Length: 374
Image 1 (cartoon, rainbow, N blue to C red):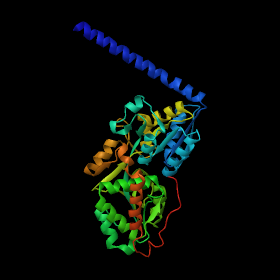
Image 2 (cartoon, rainbow, N blue to C red):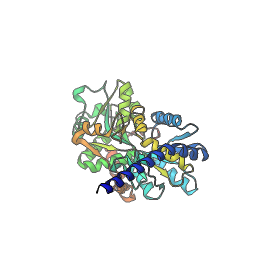
Image 3 (tube, rainbow, N blue to C red):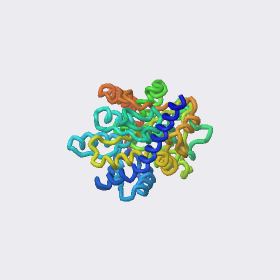
Image 4 (tube, helix red, strand yellow):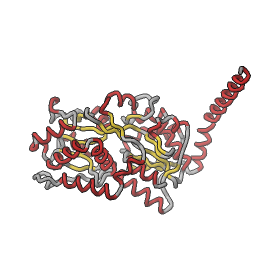
């Protein structure tokens, strides 16, 4: 037995030494391959450029000679562009979007290529799918309000409280509500359809209440935050919580609530395109996003919640602890494809439109905000 243990110990030590040696060599080799491809990685992302800029800067500083060609694109447009460009034979290198359902659809339809690395292996099991789609952040959906307009004891901290506030004071909130437009925003369709599954009774009551008061329908959280900050909108529903929290830290008009009955939590999903023109650079970028260092930058520089438990900053565990039983993560997988079925999507949007058309002086004018990429 002692001889077997010595042999096993020797094998383990040798394996670890090879791993260390490979790890020491992998960065120069991979960087060289990326530079030979042209020194560029093309990223289509449904994340505001100013939010992701700290990550871009850190990546380019680490990999001298590499440039990130980042395109800030609405999630629905991103989806369509990938399909169109792939048919022509060209494609972006990395697709990164919080519209989890559209990302899973693209992966499921063969637009991604697999990638395995020490960084992908460090993710929680829920954060990878088919070794092709990778969750990079946690993104809770929030109620956001104007702190100057709502007293602390008025702020709704559950869906029922929000419904009650809107139905008891319709004149006050008429034309001064905002949420995502599920017809024009892929992220909006994801959030609202998942919300309808989480609690259909509360969701549709809330939609009817908002529709009756002429809710503004937007394509980006940043646009809604601007409207709330100015006081033109008093309450926004299902906004991206990380954006809202970051804005609240520097804007005294912004208040953020995680609903204590349930808070939906989605993820920004990234994958490498099957027809990536710069695959070596794409792998470097994806691994950087998923590394502990990259996750730390996402948390500290971009204000996003990380998925890696070993990353400093705003980790998933702290969010779970904060939300407790209200924590409702959206799972990465084929279940997300349900509302991309044409019939189910049509039925959902038909019910949504009916709720938006409730008789109301405000809803008859139905503001629909100027598109802004998300």
